[in-house]
Image 1 (cartoon, one colour):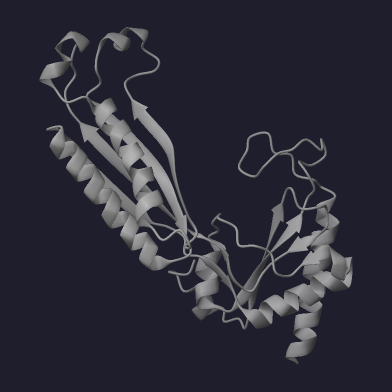
Image 2 (cartoon, helix red, strand yellow; image 1 turned 180 degrees about the vertical axis):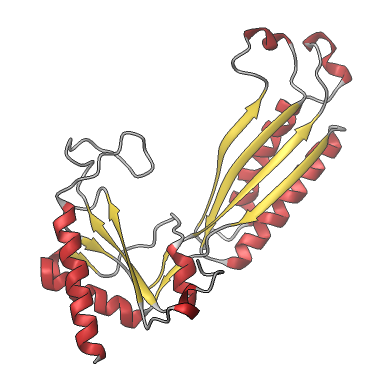
Length: 255
């Protein structure tokens, strides 16, 4: 949308975003000025070898062993070579090798291992350091084992950075409909990411969270991006009231 010229075709003075948040009491709001959500990048590395019988494993590199070492070294790199005062989360989310649906393949060393993960941070310099560090770790580990490798690092969403005037305005709107005690105006930044960040880089604005309680109608603990998540419909009227009030007040102050 940004690349297609959204704000050039439809100029706006400010933008606002709202996202439900389980764990925050129903109807409560949470926000902060400045960095609120992290950037997110994804990476992938592959280790290439040849199929081999375990009895002949000494003849070819073991992609599982090499990839496992890289996973450990990646976490060591994050723990020992990044400033601990800088928020950062490195997570391995996929480790694939062999054919899990073919029981007979248990007798064969796979020819390839594929590992994917994510990196979240608030600092662009840190993102560059991690890309360089992981690329070096993968290349050296593969070379040491006489295997081949590939590495891919894709820059994803930038950090969500709220502007102070729009944040103050959003807080006042939320307080007017739910009360001051139910609005957390200086929440801790979250190590999660959101593509609304691209819009906030173009236009000043504010991204705010609305609480949905524990897990929705079932009241069971649950989290976003979980197949069991049950959105609490009781938050909808409060969210609607927030949007209507925000639009009315913004248009009145803009006249």
